[in-house]
Image (cartoon, rainbow over all chains, first blue to last red; front, side):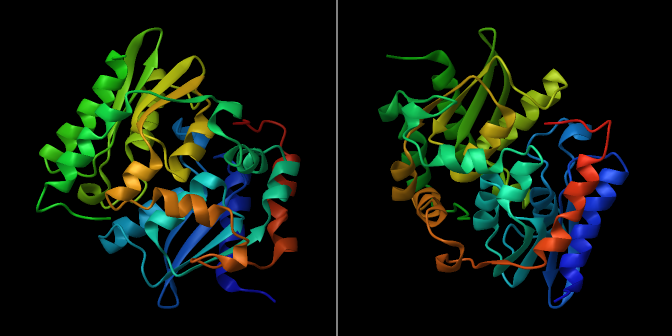
Length: 155
Length: 155
């Protein structure tokens, strides 16, 4: 079944490649039945490894709505979100996500999504990029400061 | 043992709370023994749910270096990265990551990091935010376009 929002996300992805702007990924954010933001991958032209389609679309939608939450929104993305974008989606809290191609489709074209999902399952010491804990006690200080702040804005 | 880079990441986090700018998180990116970028959480003042300390520091470091890769760099972050930031780290590819407080310390102050790590392990249909596949065949089109492009810049 054809869905117009997904079609637009895919169109954004294809156009992005044709224009030489970045990777083959596009996304749209929908609220109340209309598109409020679009995004395509701009990692290479902007030298920003976080500029994936979903991240760009989420940032644009939040700018448009003047909020850091996407309550009542749906995200349509041309490809299953990578772990970074999945995390961003959880922080933005839209109602639902629709995706076209899968993480393994992305892997077939040389993108690391599946690899990163595998790494996430490993203990810190077994990962390709080592993660090492240090100074945990000192690291608690910012949280103590936060817990004592009365006018903190939760997100 | 005290590490000056971790101390600076923690200082960024504490100062961020004191200044009322955002959440209790800070990060620095180090290359060749010196700090090339710093970042603190600015989700609420910028209405950007992706503006975590690590994301801000990675974007700033890439801007400073004029590249989308952090080869030869180390990231020091006041708290264990959330899944979004962990994904961003994998895309930026620094050599190593050091963190102070843990994801469970963050959870104790009301941050969703641990919750998102748990959600990642669930099948798409069992997640709090439903992820639904649609139009996979059409979703392959951007990848076909990408695979046929000769001057594509891999990242």
